[in-house]
Length: 625
Image (cartoon, rainbow, N blue to C red):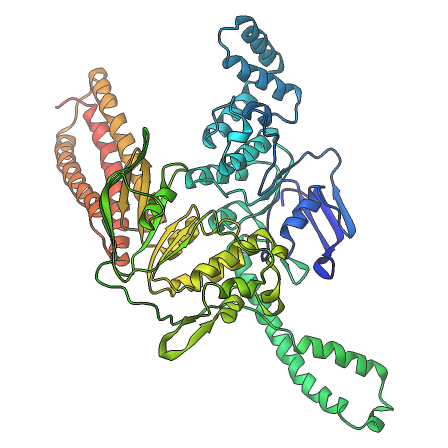
């Protein structure tokens, strides 16, 4: 915690919907600058709790107090704005003098012909010394790709609306941020920028997110809402996982102890009434509590399957010179790839480069403009899209799943029934007979996922599968997919998911260019950083060398002359090996162990290049002796 000043205090908070208790008697607080993540299953009250903290809902009982004068910013999963308002006006909904000055200045920039308007706007910016705030405003909009200020809100996509809401809140710079899935609809580049921005902020933060890398990087405290109770962990996500496991093991030990005692007490309770008449009433009351404790169930959400699906033939999916464009927007300009058995491919790239269109072409939902896509005879696609399906509100959960399949076949003649699959994905007991109309948005998304899995596809395609799924469901899904024996193709901004489940990437770079990278996302980032570092050094070295050689008049010694010549040979050899490794990265599909060796060698090589180039530059500034 940054200090002991509480920005938020929550005492005895409870909320129910009819007979369903979401949470009861919650008590916790946030300090100035503290970054906190809230973790809970879908349907357990996360959104209701955030709405109560933001003042949009009332609790059944309890008290929520924010420090006097604290400005609160709330990013909802589905923000709502005036559809007839412009982007610029929406960004400055909550006006203050500096925001008004920036708004007038940006508006004046859109009308350069009005000199008087521009002069007035400039004078106001100078008077309020608002240039730093305007620079921050420009940075936020640039990183979130919002530039069309005159565009009406009604013409924005769902992703653009989410980014607009995030920008509007960050511009306000509130002292307390409440964020509900802030990384939804952001590409990886935006997420990495937002990570840094929030870490550097002095604001207190409470957020719900499914992005494990983002959570790990930003938050130093975890609040877990489970069994209607809040558990607090003073550490990051890794610390939380470790301590939660300890808590579960302790609970198991307590339940085992209660079961042993329950057996003894049950024998006493079954004895004749005459034998109990003299016993203390408190022992009978204690027995009832003991019985409840002994029957507790710890759900560790493990999924162990030995699935038997339709075999993959020798031909999977072949893409030959595939082209796709919309007017002057090119998605593919001659893409080639032949999928192999058990391929596990991740697709990454900025928003709007055509990732979703790419997978729709593979599944036949979009036509290609040129080239061809050949699908093997044995291929059965399972497609989990961003739009979902039209779930019938009057159907029960188990009825929805059974419409798509009764069971998944396992090896040795066994079956995983629809009910068992639901249970593994956290729809337990009575929850399977809940009407769709009663489900939360995240629960509906989870149900949609199960309608795909129950069909037992052998080529599974997931388009942003982490959107609106809670962390517990994601853990279950990942364990399921780790054992999945078919081909896997995932479009995702979730770096943790990609690193865990894929070993190959299609990197959409824009203008129809797609890089085929044989490695994980983390390995790609290392490769990319090294490449950019080398290019930067190359661009800087040539002019510096030429300019400084002219200025310096000192001479190299005999030993330095020998060293200088040797450095030239060393640099040439290192550059040659660097090109060989780069070629391997770009053209060869290697196994994980070999790829790791190449990555380590490349890092060592880059360090040696940096060191030798710096020494070569020093000596090149001297004349020959």
